[in-house]
Image 1 (tube, rainbow, N blue to C red):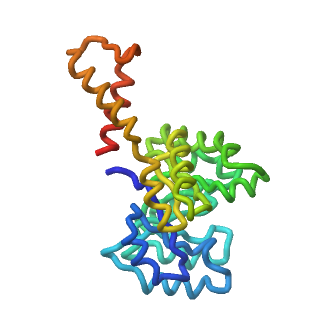
Image 2 (cartoon, rainbow, N blue to C red):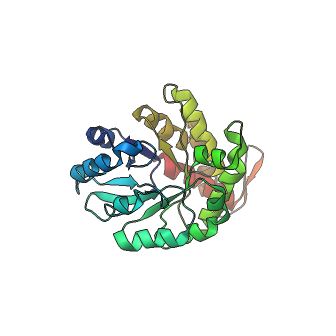
Image 3 (tube, one colour):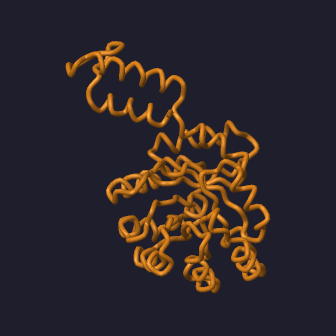
Length: 264
């Protein structure tokens, strides 16, 4: 099964948007009870989500964090039909991931968005129930008091990529691009994510879905190169082969075949 490329958020207090989000082309939909819902509306939003659940069209649920007063009531929803899985914000404990997973019989997407979460990354990545790691770029910058543009967070992104590989998880999911009106910005951000080893991204608006999917897909130039590499390898009958003055060895061929698989 190919991991989701796009996860589209829907505010938990705007459940009338769920059907539109599901029809938007996003690979997955996350109904958000955390950041998108003001404290005074938490209980009403939770009730609205419960009433909106549809087993035929399951959604992911982002609950409020363990240290909040809403955590217990949120987690009570997690095992209901219509919930595909749990998005855990500010994940800092593999034990909590496993506890949620076993209680709800649902996979968990732990969001790494604090220094403590980074410090316990291996524990979280290998926890029973972790389906995939998510990078919470905005909150991490706040927690670590890091100013500046996104590239300053790339060393932390690479930690998630490595931890995912070592734990046998799919490649991680990158954080949101706050701009949604300029598809070129979204696609460029996504291509940066892909170049670092990510294969999924959080989305805050349906307009981001198409550029995210393009950003994770190979370019026409990539596909052309991959086809030529595979053709050269197929015609070499096991012998070493050169293409455009460069040696085509087995890792290069495997990369080319992976590009063609993504393109298909």
